[in-house]
Length: 481
Image (cartoon, rainbow, N blue to C red; front, side):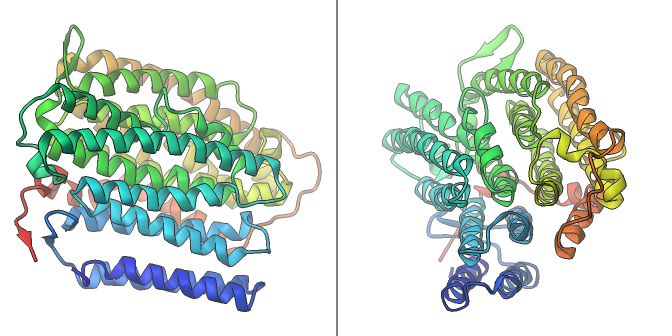
């Protein structure tokens, strides 16, 4: 089992080394970043070179091909946040911010590799606590302090909901293992536990009615921290939610078809999805700050993902997993552009993007790729992700009502994405703005844009791996030592 946890162990050691470096050499920003990246690359090499499959300690630690893919994605998103940190975090305590990013990444990776309720909760908290601190990291900013406080308070309440729900599930089934839970008989307390658990996870994916924290946190937190919240945290949360619903609670799904509602978690998710899609897209129309706009966009995309989860079909699960990875890569790149523009112009309002195509043509082109992908326009990955997701959902014709709503609201989203691009490509800048952003940040933004384009042109690069196996099959692995 220790070998199975070697990537996470390497990240923890790297975080401790970076912390030590921050104490002894407080201004060694470049060295701290290099050590962080080296530790991340070492962890990725272990995942790629020494693949281990198995189920350890009755599901506390589970490794399989699909979990490795998600660990690699989360690791990449964590390292992206570390690179963008140079644009967002102040000189003082910079090493501590990198260490917190690594600790949060460890929590997300552990979350993707477990089938045990207790480990799920512990991993979620290991993910959340560093993110709370990162949101409030800029001590000179009142907005950052407010973001951290709101994130912590609402996150604590959601954790209480989640823990109470998981405890009810354990009390009824007598087990914390998802495979054992799937064999339990129906019980009113189990229904209550499922509802409370869904409420806790709805916070993690910023779904209505638990979305109130997202706009203020995205706007007030340092942009690198907001990027990790919007990308890595959502990937880990959706992945474990898929595993929980399909492998553990699949027998209590019910139905969410129009006029065919049956008790279970599917109708609850369907209502959350519809509300998230409506509120996210409509409220984004009136935003003047790009980070808040991305927050409401995240709420809407959370609704699209929940739409896919209303069905436990294998095709729909694969579509959800593909879409959440595509969304995370796109959003991380978008926040990278915002981080550079924010450092360059001092803000992230729409006017701060005026003339970006003239001052930074390459950066503006990447922004175009990210926002067009979020809008679902071909040939980018966002288009194929939405097409595959909606097509898979329509395998159940009774879900047509929710798919029609999602397509209509996606058309609405074109307006606010194009407004940002109008400021970047059409409106002139107020003055002669010099180009900014570190070479590493610019190179990473370009790499993410190329990844979004590649996954749109050749989606089987990722989709082929996701359809070979999935969370539905993971729970059947035999227990090892």
